[in-house]
Length: 181
Image (cartoon, rainbow, N blue to C red):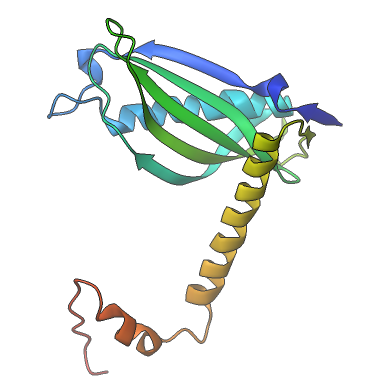
C-alpha cells in the first residue's frame, strides 16, 4: 500500500504563555521539542495507522527565539519511509499576533518507528510523491542516513585510532592531554 504525503500532513498552532518560558523570558527549547515530538507522533501514526515511537531526532537547530505571546505553528509531513520507519520533517514558525510578522524558528527531522499491538516494529505504507519539493526531501533524508552510517563506520570501527586525527584537532580550540599509556 502507498499513501500520499498530503494524506498525513499535520499542522498545529499554540499560543506561547509565560509558563512556557525559560529564565531569559524566551520560550523554553525543551517545551518546543516536546511539541515537535507530539506532532511527529501524530503525523507518523496517521501515515502508518499504528502506534509510533521516536527512534531518533536529527538536526535540531534553534534559528530564532520565540517570544511569550506569539502564536507558534508547527507543520509536519512524512519526508521518507523505510520498511518500518519514517522520517518526519517538522517546520516551526512563530507569528507576532498584533503585527502578523512571521519568523522561521526551527526545522527538524524525527525518525519514527511503527509498532504493532505486540510492540514489534511493523511495516509502514510506501509514499506517493507528487511534487519536486517532496522528491528533494526524500533524497535529503537518504543522504542524512548515508552520512550517519558513514560517520558511525568511521568512528566505531575496531581499528579506530585517535592518532589519525591529532593533526586535524590542532585547528580547534582543544588541548589534548592524554596519559602516556
